Length: 219
Image 1 (spheres, rainbow, N blue to C red):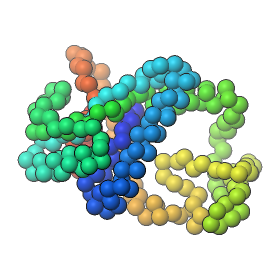
Image 2: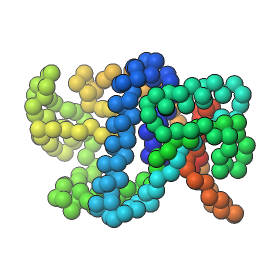
Image 3: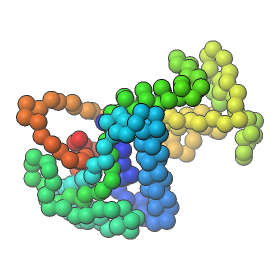
Image 4: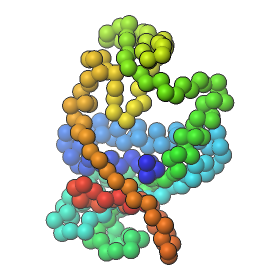
């Protein structure tokens, strides 16, 4: 993971406003904001302020080509409608020229591996049992419209509970034999991360991504 936390989505806000409406999208971005706040609060409760290298930083969506300017300005208008603090910039701290950029305030970065380890330690300290190498291969629900009991099947045993949280990157074990509506919109893609140590350190305040397809991301 590149370890950034943001309420700005990969899909353009302007497009989402057209498909699901302003109010629903506003609730969606607010949920992202609340999730970030809850995660950071939890990490600091476990490991103190600044845990896992967490820092608040701006996010920059930038363009380098004339044909992208309309898309960028449409996105700025959408962000304003959603009450997300943002502004149009002609320059960024990047070491190369850009045409324009949107600066979105109050995003953040952390060490993803340290984050998981801190959450693990906090869970164990609270009495949570963690079982590794136990893939869930099936999910059984006692009700259809509203389940009141859940059984998770693994190769070595079955776990029964009143509630089950599916926190995988892609949803699994759905009601329809593992297939849910979200699966119909998911396509397999491969992305690459390059980590380098610069001979001359440079301070880039924030995270950066462009309007290319696929896009490039810098932090």
